[in-house]
Length: 473
Image (cartoon, rainbow, N blue to C red; front, side):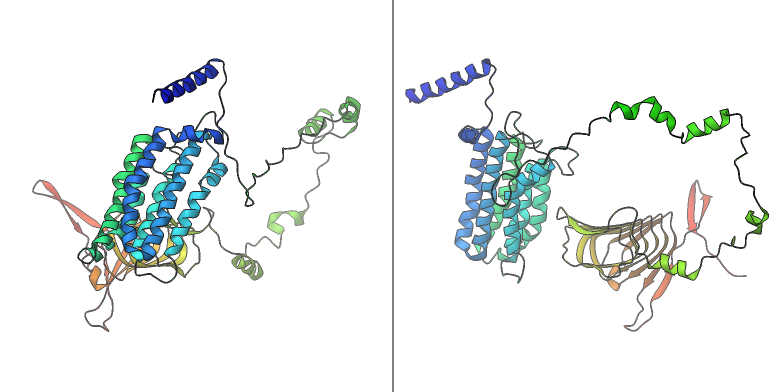
């Protein structure tokens, strides 16, 4: 015991002597044992032993696909430990270096996602829980408030919310059937909340702390060899010889631009001497082609050009697993979102002359700055919001507790029988029509115009507001 203590003291003294001499050892692979002794790395080992071990023990009893995806989860946490060690040894990389740094973790997550694809397994909810939960490990990519991510603690919590939807299904399905599955679901939840969340809160609440003296992150090619650095920018050409800059050469050339104008003015000649005479047929009132009619061929040429949005490229993608973004779609009548769940939201922005179908229940739908846009959806948990739009049509085939229309001109709302109890709120909007199904199965739709003019009367100490009613004389 005393010999080990003496050895550690001698190592500490040698390090202090090196630092006092102005020498700072750079991080290298040989420093890995020192990084492994860091409290944050030791804390991560405790996390894996306590929480990941519990998930693995439950998966061993279940076997099959559940055990397979749990082993991938173990691998992902092992990769994160390796990345934490590299953080201690490396300087903060740029975006390209960060993508290369995260590549091992990303590959493991893709393996987990691959298990959820194809023919749906009997343990699909288990697979989705594990695969979606791995997004929490990307807290290590946080690089500052402008990086587009939540703070690490919030990122872990938000990522688990995506996975919890499927985890709850496991708990409900096996609550009174199989205790091993219930144990697995409870263990994986505690792995993230409180496990990973508390770990991040204790050691990295503001993101990973990169080394200031370590090595830089080097991109690795597919062959496993470091990529060659990009070629240096060639030096600018030398200045031209003195003979090209001499006054004799420049004075022999005719002056251009404003210099020529001032030279012409100062020459003493009449300023209008060089102007052409305007004849009668050159005047606008006498020209035969002064009409503004556009020819048919010119119209066809303009209409045949593909339409595009000046705001940006078209998008239809799922961001961070929580938000479907549909942007700048023009003339697209077959937009479909079919892989959605009640935890996700849909945001439609800047679309024109397009139709979007949302096949499934989502949390909420927002339609913003769209023109001649059609939206067909099944169910929303919270609300459907229509903002800053013109000439839109929205059809609810299921239920929607709230529909709000704000600053919109021209909106057709088609409600199903299940959506007739929806609360509709309008503000600064006009031409809002609500169509409801008829009483019979083959009945015609009934159309109801929502008022846009109101009368405000002062009665009994307060104002009373009522819609304007028009009656024919």
